[in-house]
Length: 461
Image 1: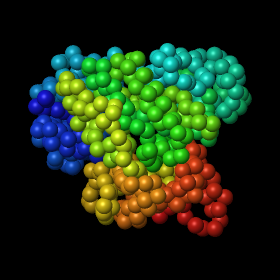
Image 2: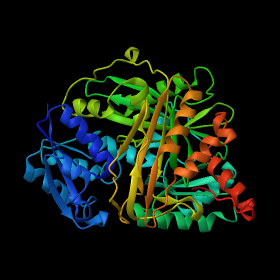
Image 3: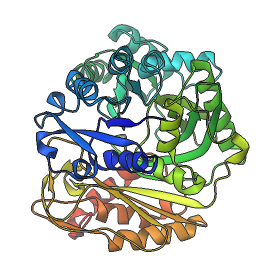
């Protein structure tokens, strides 16, 4: 087992990883920017190293500085969390060159799956179903011709994309050239890679993903599905497991497909296979996330398995502690992402000083957060303040518990607005309550609010 692990991240996920490390008796080193010098993760860790000023590219994305901190502090492994360097194959390879274990898949696997077009090709060969589209990045003319053949709407995606960015929906052939060029430019600016590909867009689809775990000895299991269909700008707001109203046997077939895909590429560690579910019940592979997911707590709540612990044990060379027949999810779990964003202004981030921070409590409620009263939400990073997670024996009770928890959660601050009020509206929405929603739910809610704007009823509190 590792004696010391460096955590190359910030916020709630840095605390989450540090908690499991401490339970395993592993000492932790947290890297941080100048802006996070007094953060909760820094206070909780055994050691802390400043790796640069506030801008992410000068600190958390500065691979050389993070690696230097790892070498200087004598760690045996690096846990990258999610975001930042978590899916950077160059960083993974640099760690390997220094004899440091990256807690994630091997660099070569990460590279093959990190390119979304390449991942589509690999999974097609493994027998996973795909939406019509390209298996390789395309030029503008090739992409336009393919889009016309597939039929509109289509979605243009950055090959190196992630986190819901670098995606654009096109509804007509006339709009395709400009949208394609804009998406290329965005991909180059955000990911440093301007390659894009095209696939059919399903406006009424559901977004369902499968959590997998794999070790170095060929053991692969899946831990069930998560429905992540409540999204704004392709970024998730609400996640739940099991997926509501799935056809009989569908989740099991998706799990088997994810396991087959993981075996095909030699996956190691925790990963997530993401699928789109069409209204007719067919599913199609989208991509693989080579890291722990933001929404991993809902899987932990129904399985009783600490996913970060499994990540660490596998990285240390241990076999998985569970077999497929051992995994028997129980009950329903839901997660709300509470962000410092203003839903009335297109979910624009609202950094500022938090005066009041009172998390929800009560039975079967979990709050993963790094925030406290007196905390200043920085403008440089993701706006996530907390993850509010509930468990209940069935979906009706889980809905009631989350509504109560959202009512109880208080965040007030100077210029700070949050998504709590909007999330409460989601849980009051008839489609969502009935489990009949799709990825278009948030857009439908915003459109309805725009139509009723003259009534003066606010979108959220």
